[in-house]
Amino acid sequence: MKRLAVVKVRGSIDVKGTIRDTFKMLNIIKVNNCTFIDNRPTYMGMLQKVKDYVTWGEVSAEDVEFILKHRGELEGGHRITDGYIKENTSFENIADFTRDFAEFKAEISDIPGLKKIFRLHPPRKGHKGIKRSFKEGGSLGYRGNDIKKLLNKMR
Image 1 (cartoon, rainbow, N blue to C red):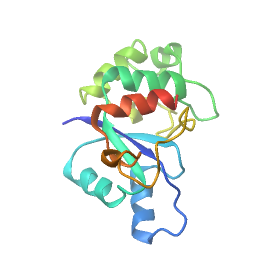
Image 2 (image 1 turned 45 degrees about the vertical axis):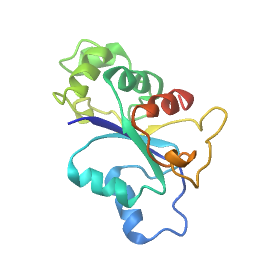
Image 3 (image 1 turned 30 degrees about the vertical axis):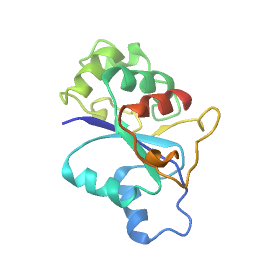
Image 4 (image 1 turned 60 degrees about the vertical axis):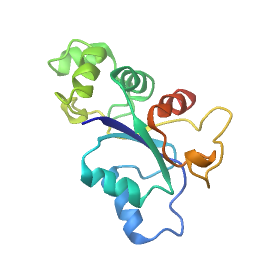
């Protein structure tokens, strides 16, 4: 199994109710929100349902660490730090947590108070196009390892 990052690219206005429900199940409500899931068949079916509104791809432990350090937010709006991880979990720092997270030995919910949604900036230099798939030169759908470039642009 692999970890996937899912980023919502388009809004939810005039969208079918079933697609809106799928967004709620994936925990991505607003545009430029990101969440991490695995690639089990149920999630892959959900991604196929919302493929015209999101982009996704495989991430490594380093990518998850990058997002947690830059965009990880605790309840109350505070940033996540190595000290918080050490005090409230069995991990020494963010890097230890992300290594175990990438190997499916830990989950986001193992950090108390950490929000499951990561609010990203719009990408620097903009999206290539939010009406076309990644294969056609746009920003939607599956993009594989190229999700790293998008996450870096949206830090």
